[in-house]
Amino acid sequence: MKPQTSGTLIWDIPTRLFHWVLFLCVSGAFLSAWFYQYIPFLAHEICGATALVLIAFRLFWGFVGPAHARFSDFLRGPKATFSYLRAVFQRESPPISGHTPTGGWMILLLLLLVGAQASLGLFSNDETDSAGPFYAWVSHSTSNKLSGLHELVADCLMVAIALHVIAVIFYKVVLKEDLVRALLTGRRHGVPESAAISSHRLGLAIVILVVCAALLVWLIRIAPPLPSVLM
Image (tube, rainbow, N blue to C red; front, top):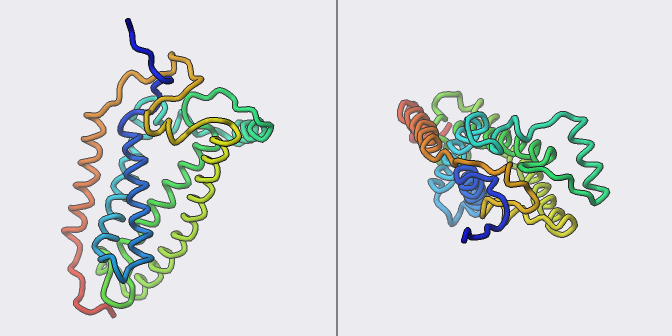
């Protein structure tokens, strides 16, 4: 007898791991920035570098991953997005297999913000004794400007994360959709079996991730050494 499954398999393993590991990296980066007196700067650097590798991976995965991980599956135009919003505020949840139109744009925004934040961190400094690995590639004044942008993007990112959390709570409480559970199990209820993914493409995901990580490591290795004193 075939065992019953709880919902339709929509999210592949690489997409789910990306989401939760990125959550840990972003959380760790914020915590290490807020409690820098107690947490070594190296922890902040590791969180930022890992987040940057994950963002690069997700951008590639958005083109070659399984169906519902692709940007073409969930990025919709203004008309479709506003139509979906209207239906949601009328407490109707149109049947959608993957990410919703609004969720898709939020994902893109978060990818851009985290990517920008991590990239700026590579060139930033704290005006005391810590700096990103690419600090010596720019002038100190340029690094200071990029450090200011690093802080500004951090504020924007916190606002975007708050909106994202509010939306997840709204779906759970009002629309009775548990998006957190779906991203843990990979399965969604109310979705036809015909929308299920047939492969996680784990091998391809590993190759992409290794290439992205190797590229960042190489760039860090060839970067000029940091000065003993930041000026």
